[in-house]
Image (tube, rainbow, N blue to C red):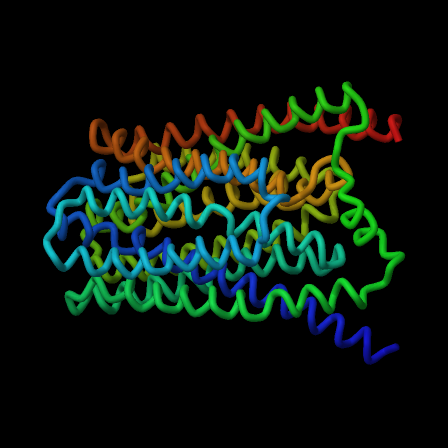
Length: 426
């Protein structure tokens, strides 16, 4: 019995590993563009606003596809779907590096980014769906934490490779190298996922609460009142996701340019500084998840982090030109608070409400609108700092954080009504 249990845990860990390998590879491929944005502006002889349209198109198609997936994800075979879409995306990643060396128009870059948005849209939500179906609660949250830390691994890989190849004028190589690693991760996933999930399904304890709940596909609202409250709850989540990630990606996407333009930091060094910042963000996000899990209501952490973010953004608007070190510190603290707050209303709340809405679908919806925020954030911020100045951009970030704090207070009230009404309907 002990041997079977041990092997079951091994198989569950393998499921996490193959999903995260593909997710990390995708994130690394996606982050190369941000890491090399200053160099790409020069290569395509364009402006920051125009280059940011590539990200805008990516996140726009990414968001639309994620909403679409909510309606048909239960009707498709995840293994085949991810193998085709992620496989094609890895090939397109390689193509980004190739077309850049041919002197083609930036329009081709826009087309590839739009297609990659569609192709990469299912990776995170499908992974969460698999985690929810085959893992225990503890393993589920461990996997979510690993996703946060793994983003740093992906960041280190993409930014370090980018810094090296930019320094030797070979900016296209990171797209080719990481694209091939991405393709390898897809092959590993396709070959192994079926046997892993089959073993877990055949050998896990039948009486396990999470397993029984997921097997029966419980997730439909039991009455009209719950449906109404759930709809309101999800609307608030969607709006919060847009604002929160608009601020995060807007600031994070232009850190290297901020250092280069305002403080004359070398392009390669500005990329490496961005790596360090994002590693710290991921580490503190994991700490934030641990803190949120211990709170009576994890959303209280979002209120706190949003209010603190307002303070940091206002400080940036007043002391931005004091020193590069102070500016980077305040930017780091703002983004840490932003991500910590987001972890509460995204990953933790997704599992918390699993009796009402399946976590995979919740993740698709919240991630779709987070992508919309990521889509418009860098463009909005670039328009503001190019038309006005960086101080105006920081003031905008303060306003966004304040709006998120207000929305979170509304979300807490709605969630309390939703859970209470759902319990009465059982």
